[in-house]
Length: 103
Image (cartoon, rainbow, N blue to C red; front, side):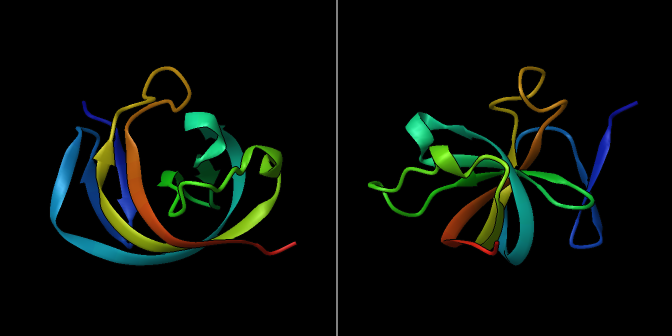
C-alpha cells in the first residue's frame, strides 16, 4: 500500500513527479530543517510537511529552524529527495516566491 498525502484537499501519490500545472499555495508552517546551505527549507504545517525551494540565491534560512513562516509560491510536484532520510516519505515541493517570518 502506498502512503498518501493531502495537498489542497486532493490526495497525491507518494512517488516523485512534476505537475503539468503547478498549484498556487500560501501556508503558514514551522521550519523544521534547512538544506542546500540554508537556501531551502523543510516546513511542517498542521497537516503536511513540505520541501520549500528558496526564491533568492543569497538567502540563508539556517537560523530560522523552529520559526513560523508564511510561504507563498507554487507547488510544482512531489519530491523524494530527502525521503527515508529526513522526511518519512516523498513530500510536495514548493517553489517559493516569498518566505517571511510571522513570529
